[in-house]
Length: 161
Image (cartoon, rainbow, N blue to C red; front, top):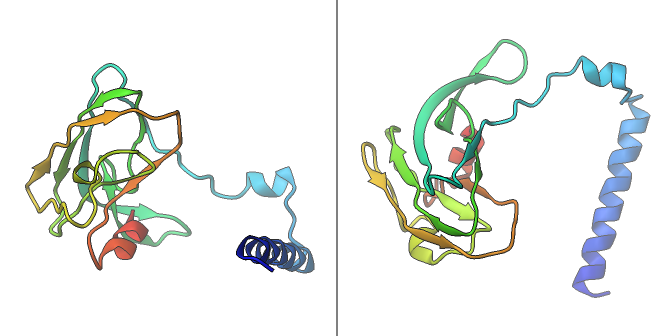
């Protein structure tokens, strides 16, 4: 069995077990049941095709996910997560500002850009600083995502938003 076959078999087994678990618990996925569940709030759309830029401000927030308990969160331009960016081929020159008390970065998952523009742990933006990468986007259309990527803080910061 090669690696691909092993991974495929594992995924099929996991999906089957999840399905059996859902059926054994009497899960009702009817439209009426789903209508009563909280809906995911979609982030706002930030279209950069004309301006070739986006201002992303890392900030603290407070968000309620389930019940009435608020959680302390992080976001870009809002309390949790960040806006959905529409970017096209050509120049893209975002401005990243940090209002948090801890360093952040902006790592662009899936954008084909040089390392000095990729915002990994090697490019921290401390409180009150800004980072202005000048990027040239030259790739096929794709869905990509961005998040802070500071060494030994990534999981914590991504979970907070």
